[in-house]
Image 1: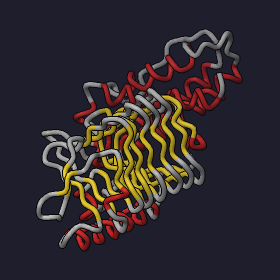
Image 2: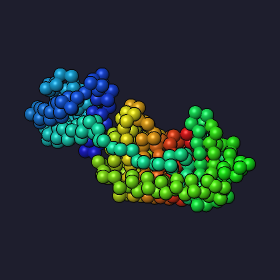
Image 3: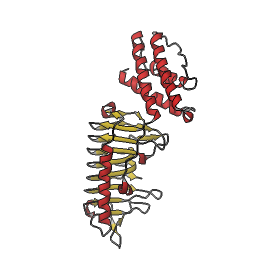
Image 4: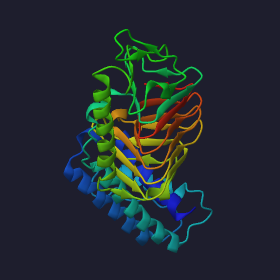
Length: 337
């Protein structure tokens, strides 16, 4: 079992155990300090044990929290699939458990991350500067979540595949694929639409800049290669692209904010998902992407994409959030709420 896998298991395991525990609602700052102390004690005890027998480990200083950390630590080592564990392994594993547990517990305390201000661009489920294309039948918005689309500075001819019907007043169009009273706007429609769209694009670009300028809590996490990871609230920054080859979980609550700063492309593999756990809301998840964004066919995606280039959703993809692109947005029989 590689070091990275062990560390990942520790981080994910500790977070899952604590967030799922009956104690999480009553955790205090002192509790979190005790958890870290307990993790250190467990690590020290592993080193002292210096044996491959898998002997029981003491609960540590905090009788409520200690067993949770112990359970994860024991499962990580004794159920790791290793055929033998040497004294040297114990020393190494113990240090990793302490480091990973402390990191995970620090994350659980939570980074205070303000939302990215979208201002008037928040009024659009889809906003693009050079066009919106669609193949097949897509469903944008719903009766409980109406959605608007807009393009600027380009004209309405850059919106294809939606069979637009211009309103008699000339300020917006409608489409059978845009639900819940959602409207479609373009820069060549009558006033006040052009000025409203111009401001929305300005606000979209400002939101992109705001997200890109956030000080990171996590840098180059897993080198941008995500598969099965459990991420906690904070600002994540990559100098490369991010490839999500397997479903990942964003763990937090309704006040948790995630900001992902991606210098390259963002891709989510087909039939994979972004999973929100613990009450995380899609409107609090921000994906700032300098390259293009590709959401795979039949995948499920959550969050607000602030993209400097194209956003493409594959066939039958389902997204809860917004597509805000400084170039184009491309759909293929998708659902966007």
